Image 1 (cartoon, one colour):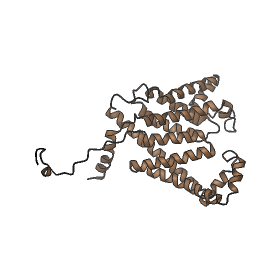
Image 2: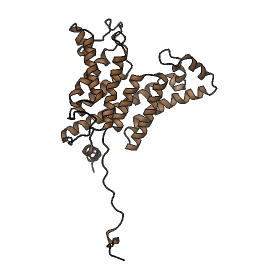
Image 3: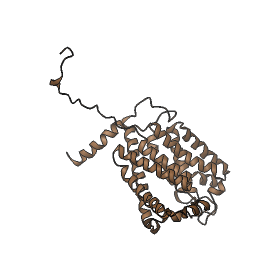
Image 4: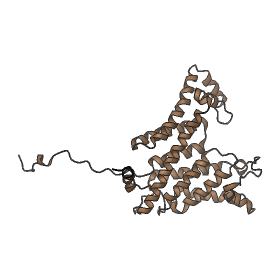
Amino acid sequence: MSLIARVWRSVEGPLIDFDPRTTPMALGRSGLGLASLILLLANPDHVLFAPTPRAPSGISCSGPGSVALWCLSEAAAVSPVVPRSIAVVVLVLVVVGYRPRWTAVPHWYVAFSLATGLSMPNGGENVVQVVSMLLVPICLSDDRAWHWVSPSTPLPGRARGAAYAAFLGLRAQTSIIYLSTAISKLTNADWRSGTAMTVIVHDPMLGFPQAVTSRLESLSWWPMLAAVITWGTVLAEGAIALLLWGTRRSRLVAFGAGTGLHLGILALMGIAGFELAMLSLLILVILGHRAPSRPPKKSRSHPEAKVSGNAV
């Protein structure tokens, strides 16, 4: 069997059974919308679009960002309430799961506008922007009114192929995110030496309260624990990047490791938007499609060994 035939055979099986219209996919997509919605509702415009030397007006409108929602509104001299209201409405529709086919492109546009326009992004906006773009081919073939209900019709062949290609791109992007993050940490001396967590707890923005930090540093085993957390984070990120391409069981291990990692970061550092975006991404990539059906196992009994029910 040629290499091309082997590759096609490995793709053909999952492709035939592939259907992303599942509850986990809906949950992950709603989580992405919720991450952006929380960002908008929790922060006024003067915080999201604070003036910087690169963007004195507070909104970065250079390059592709010039067509972003807030930039177009600024150019048209429209009140800042208008783009914010449009974005909130779109994100609410995404969160509640209304008409994925209709809201997929507006969702990406709002995510793109936030990722390119914010003066101080936290990283979650870029994740949501890329993921929402890759979800467009998946959602365009979804004719359901709500993404929470079970589909009543099968996906057409062409739509299934486009959705599957987008899903593989989503998996590749997720793997790249984790692998590049792990590698970038290894270029930092604090992460290589195992002392990064000790530095992070003192960070004025991401660190722990002073009382907690003092208590931790009074413990004799704190340096060892800090080293374990530091190196464990790098190992977990590298492992997730590789396990995503393994068997379903391997991917479930990656999901468990990623969930523990991001919940831990959320509890310790409180970066809610970024961690919610990453948890939603893991749900989409690992749980968000229907598992291929397995053919029934052949009976181990031989035909000649069977006897009729009347035999004594």
